[in-house]
Amino acid sequence: MTWLLTGGAGYIGAHVARALGAADMDVVVLDDLSTGIRSFVPEEAAFVEASILDEGAVLAALREHDIQGVIHLAALKYAGISVEEPLSYYHVNIEGMRSVLSAMEQASVDRLVFSSSASVYGTPDVDLVTETTPTHPESPYGESKLAGEWLVADVARASGLRHTSLRYFNVVGSGGHGIYDVNPYGLLPAVMKALTEGRAPIVNGTDYATSDGTAERDYIHVVDLAEAHVVAAQRLAGGTSLGPVYNLGRGEGATVLAMLELVREVSGIDFEPELGPRRPGDPARIVAAAELAAKELGWTARLGFREMVQSAWDTWQQVAASQP
Image (cartoon, rainbow, N blue to C red; front, top):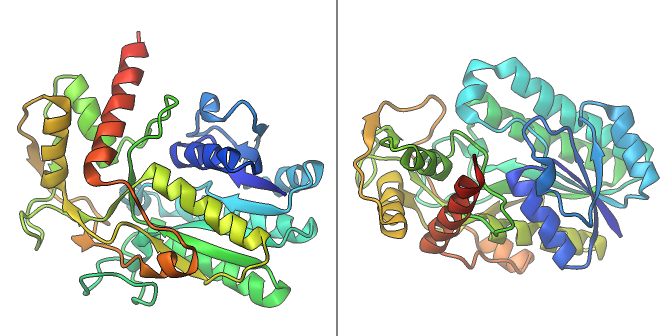
């Protein structure tokens, strides 16, 4: 069967597209290239340049390519910026979700894997976040992702849509192919850009209630994350009923300063970070309990923190070397 992958020209989407291809699954990428990069899309994948807000274009893509399932990644994704621009995030992420679901309904496409986020939890008061941990998003971005999950669930109740939502924790690393994280606010891209330019990287927040005062996150390698999408899509294609949500993480956390120490070791560059204030919308600590995905999807994250940093640095060096 053929899957439509929205946002497939982005950092995560391009890795998902390649993982689908490696599993001999046909994929059509739909992306408006507002933040995606055309060269990230695999040559063997059909490409549709369109916005998810254009319901007619999404419907046309579904019908023209005889799509049987959708993996929906396209969205605005910067939590801090969403605090400053909430209306943009609600428009693209929630109206975009409605547009995709409406087009799917019209084209009789009844399988969906939705890209959600651990930001729906906010700052949890538990050591490990399970899928049943109460949701208290602290940014419009997190709120828009939670609203997306609600939309999917409501449509499923009304139509029998088969679906699951994957709540990503912090995605880093690279699978090669020159695909790198273009997020200017992500930890590793920001640090590596600063080092390349001879600047000190900035640490946002040093007064959190964590082991060293910096924010603690459950980081997951983008290759592992992409493989989870393949497994979810395969399960839905085979008729398996999946849970409404799954956490995608390693089940262990690392602080910002711990990740910077790995950058020092991998890059061979000694540096002292500049210490800055917290960013709005950033929780202190959030780490996944990933047992449900292991049990029901048969998926677990394999790659560790050093492999994440090493792969990100290697690809960043390739990209930087190719710049004029």
